[in-house]
Image 1 (tube, rainbow, N blue to C red):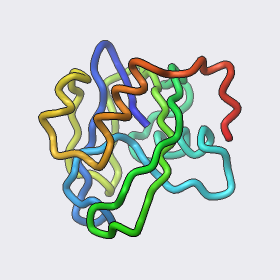
Image 2 (cartoon, helix red, strand yellow):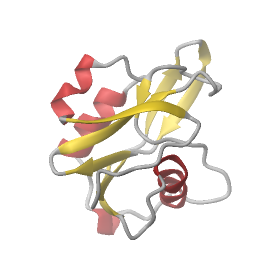
Image 3 (spheres, rainbow, N blue to C red):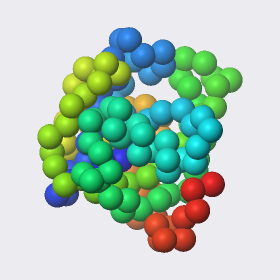
Length: 137
C-alpha cells in the first residue's frame, strides 16, 4: 500500500527484526489472512503507522502483480496495490521499521526498495482503476 499526502508518498525502511527484505525501503505491507485485500490494507495501515480509517481514504487500486523474494527465488508474493490519501504526515512506526520518509514519487528510484515497488508506485499514479468498481477480491 502506498500512502500519499500533498504530493509525497510514505516509504518505510524495514528493520532487521522482520523475516524478509531486511533494511529495504517499502510501502505498507502485510499478509492476507481471512479477509479481502482492502480489509487487510486498512489493518496494516493502522498497525504500521497508527493511522485509523478517519485519517486515510482510498484513492486508487492497481492490478495485482507478482514479486519474487530476492533471498528465496522460489517464493513469489502477490502484491495488491492500493493508493490511500492521508490527512496527516504524522505517523507512529511499529517494530517492523526503523525509519520513514515522505518523498516525491519520482524519487523512489533513489532507494534500495523491495521488489517492484517502483512499478507499484507508477501503476497507482498512472493506471489505477476506479475505486468504486473495485470489489476487493
